[in-house]
Amino acid sequence: MTDTVNIFALSVGTTFLVMIIGIPIFRRFLIRSGLLDNPNARSSHKTPVARGGGMIVLVSIVAGLAVLHVSAAALPTDLIVIVVIACALGCISWIDDIRSLSPIIRLVSQIIAIGSAIAIYPNLVISIAPYFDGWIAMTLTALVWIWFVNLYNFMDGIDGMTGVETVSICAGLSLLALTGILSDSIILPLTVIGAAALAFLYWNWSPAKIFLGDVGSIPLGFLLGWFILQAINNGAWLAALIIPGYYLADATITLIKRASQRVPIWQAHREHFYQKPILYGISHQRIMRRIIFTNIMLIANAVWLVPINFWLGIIVATMTICTLLWNLSQLRT
Image 1 (cartoon, rainbow, N blue to C red):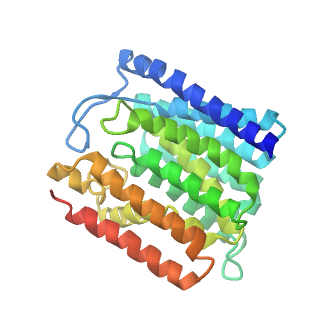
Image 2 (cartoon, rainbow, N blue to C red):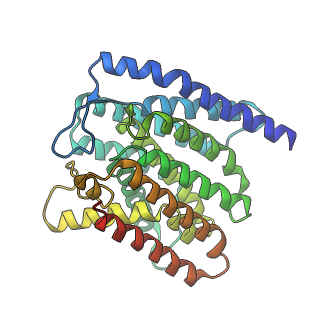
């Protein structure tokens, strides 16, 4: 137990240290380089903000995981490969932050990354036989993962949003492991990722001093998508979907609506449920407090209610998410 606590403290401490030192330095670099997210008609902020802080988030995660790996807590080979692929996606996303790559290039890079991961580790394929198997199951798994990666990018639209969601998912999956529903081997890696996101919230909470950028949201979506697939394939599929349930619902409903209107879904907009109150002058903090409360309810549901009563868990999760979506759509003053 003592060794585990020491490893925990060392890896999390390393992650926080990289964030504490790296973000202020990198923010100054971004400002001097003119890498700013300037407000426009589709923005939820009013002043230019440095964009690209996800680079340091990714570096801090790699540093924390490296400490885990060399501290008698060697990481599984598959996680190491997934982190390497996430870093490759981060490099491409960094170029996108600087030069604005075309949607096709971004999508192809994600297809290659996720396709490679599934080809190397076919155990990632969601087990949905006898209904589907082979290439069909692989394709469906890839589509789900690609959607989650882009969902993470689409939902990164107000201060604190992605940081809060990342901490929530890491906490929820870790609790599932602590209760024995999932393997406890995922707890320390998830703690490192959650620590990086929590540290980033210090600078990203409203009013944000720095944004993640695609270099942060895309790799985070990829990494957390891998952990969620692990949970699904270990039998905790409902809990794994409930924990990020609000994120899934807001992004999916909004994008389906935009697709039905024949509007390019990759274009920036302010039509997500969480963005609508901003148009009426509601602060980012008020919106995020509601989302944090909802995420806590969803985590409690997934960890403690679902194992007791499957159908009641679905009903409570659906009501919780719908209540938040309705509240956000009605929030005016």
